[in-house]
Amino acid sequence: MSGSARWLQILGLGALAAGLAGLDYSSALSWLSAGLLPLAGLKLAEARSLPERRLVSLLTLIGGGVQGAQQGELLPSLLQLLATALGLAGLLALEVGSGLSWRAVLRRSLAVLLAALPVALVLFLLVPRIEPIWQTPNLRGAGASAVTGLNSELDPGSISNLADNTGPAARVSFSSGQLPEPAERYWRVIVHEQFDGQRWKQRELPSNRRTEPTAADSNPESNTSSQVWLVEPSPVNALPWDGSGRANPNQLRVNRSGELQPLQASRERQAYLVRDTGSPQPWQQRQPSPADLELPAGSNPQLEALGASWRDLATTEQRLAAAKQWFTQQDFRYSRSRGALPAQRGLDVFLFERREGFCGHYASAFTALMRAAGVPARVVSGYLGGTWVRPLSGAPYLDLRHSNAHAWSEVWLAGQGWQRIDPSAWTTAPASRAEGSEAGDSTNPISSWLQWLQWQWWGLDLAWSRWWLGFDQAGQEALLQRLFGDQRQWLGAVVLGAVAGLLALALAWLQWLQQPGKPQGRRRQLNRVLQLLEQQGLQLQPGETLESLALRAREAHYGHSELLTELVASYNQLLFAPLTGPQRRQAEARWHKLRKELGKRRLKAL
Image (cartoon, rainbow, N blue to C red; front, side):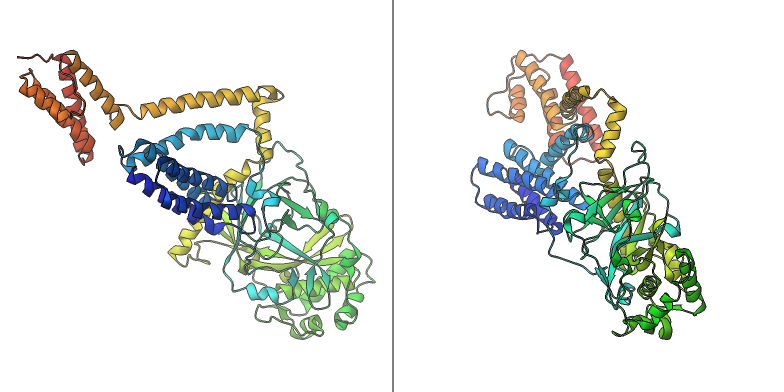
């Protein structure tokens, strides 16, 4: 059996092994992927027959498919494609034996994959879609790993701990290719509704009230505005978004508080698409509950007294105006250096003694004041701003780091629903937090070429994710409506006809690859030369080489036997000699000239 086949199979298993690093091992499919690799390796080590070696290539192809069912990002997809190509090449090398080098076998395998791509594209576009298996809830687990980031519990000073953490949190690209306005760069993640006088907590909703559909498209045919998110692993079961739009209902849900949540908790990298709908969100209009007014009596007496003094104002808007006026008159300072507050009367200390703090302090204090004033309010934590990156390839995107973590408030206004209020903006908070920055400009220069390379790769990754996630069930439905309208009965016939036609074109293309100039095509040319010689009485004997045939022609005193010798030498030169580009073109011209001359002459025995 071919030695190149063994090395191709080993490399294929290596590509599969590299893809195991990004799997979530709380999923059954991940353990299946991990189990296939050692099985294939052991089979390769002990294989002695051709069928056993074929099984190794088959296991490689299956392993690539199983990993593809779990990971759709760019790097895993490239590794899966490499493993598939190497598995196919190893199988082909086994079938042809030692007749071809491993490079030639790999080229043939890539040609087969390229020939199959048009068929795959037709099936991808026209065959009714199901959700990718890596988004299927019962195949995704809760995950065992977690990273730093936002937390379901918010201590007023806890977000300041992330201020110096420049690790990646998420990135988002926009179909418009434009950076949203500063007021639109609030990315909500967690809603904190329960307050014990010191910390804010995420309220656990009953399972039957946990989620609700996102708003439907006001014009489902347009779908012109969308966002593609890639979010790093997080310890919380909520994902960043702007609070509007429609997410894939088979992948995500929006709960009654406006949190975007996966159907199954998972601490792995998340990729999802959110389409703009132009419609109000149900969560924004949900009536407040008694929990949105709860405030532990006596926990912060000065705060409670101040808030209660605004209860006499007739409207909620007047109470908000009074709170804003009070904050702006007290010379509050925005600083991340003042973190934890005392366990007793912590918010009183912040409001009436320190008057200095981070976003969590201001959001906590303002929300508590609103509750004391009789206004339903809650704290929201997420991200603010971001770095606008324009990669050389792919669309621009917003890069969010853990240092972009932010907290703000939401209050209930009759007739308007839940509205965002950011009390940090009433202080000396630097505008750059909301304005963001642009990668590579004078305010945020690229610190190293490694950072620059990372941004470029992320741009490609987002472009791939936008192409893959953007063509979901809604996108396919819109395409089919444009192509077929109400005549869907022709869809099956069109798909079968397109697949048959593309398969015919693929076979023709593979045949063309073996035309003159390729070793296989040149072999056919040589066969025609041998047929001509056979008609003239000079026949290649079993086991005889071309050189021996030319020598026999010369010994038999055939006319023009020198021409046959030159033709054989030209054939061997083209097939085996390491030639440069110009040398190969000259050798090709000489080969064609000798063939034509041989066709004009007739070999005769003297």
